[in-house]
Amino acid sequence: MKMVYEWKPEIVDIKETENGKDIEFSIRVIAEAYYETMKAVQQVFEENDVITDVFLYTFPQHEYRVIVRKDYYEDFILQLLKHRLLTKAEWKEETH
Image: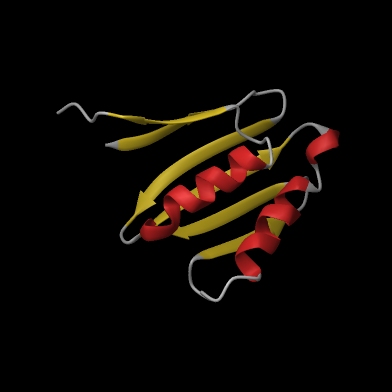
């Protein structure tokens, strides 16, 4: 099964790319009310005991590059959902 998610384009823009053992995200927060939200997501992963789970790089214009270890992918997606950057996350059967 694969986790899929949705977001409102007026709040955030998200691009996801698989890169070997990691998943890379390009995230741009568009809505001013959500500008501080990525800092809250980052804090969750900085405060846990795993150093290499999520790397979050901040750029101007509220843009972020996030590198997520595959075994922390679901945790990262659920944090985005918890902080309301995503509107929906669910498991889908993979079709080949």
